[in-house]
Image 1 (cartoon, rainbow, N blue to C red):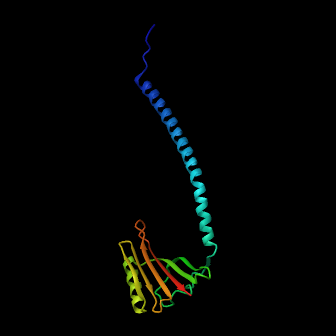
Image 2: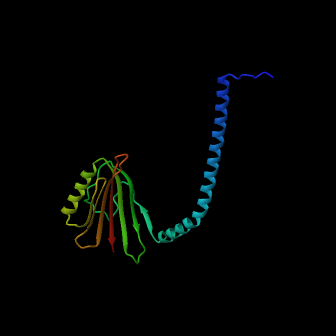
Image 3: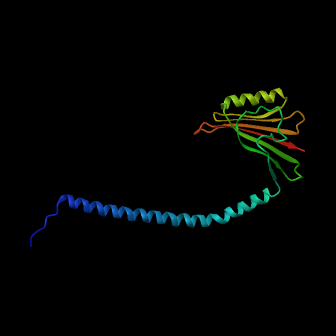
Length: 180
């Protein structure tokens, strides 16, 4: 019997086809196994998540959130607080806690065109000029915050200025909590 010689290029093509098919089978098995593992992990975690969700819902049932039109400032925020014109407002609301707590939270959050440091200085000057007492300061590279109380100690002002390290976007969050 005569040995048949297969051209080297045909041998290589066949080997690559076999390797390709084996790789494809391996990928399919890995994806199938990963999907099966994720599904069993999600089933194990799901009851705990549902429990946490029901706890959160019961806490939030007593809170009342009222959205304030973006053209208006929530009532509890000082009317003379510096606001940036034409800033994109991302939150503007009033959150009322249950009557027994006697607290209401007023929040305005916006995207600023000014730098982190410029905003921080603006609000630091506002607090000083209005006789608010600073009770806490955070001065980090991408996060600056001031917490102050008004002279009669019935309101707390939280000013947080943060910079997204990826986009460079600066966000200002002004929140006043009034104790009634």
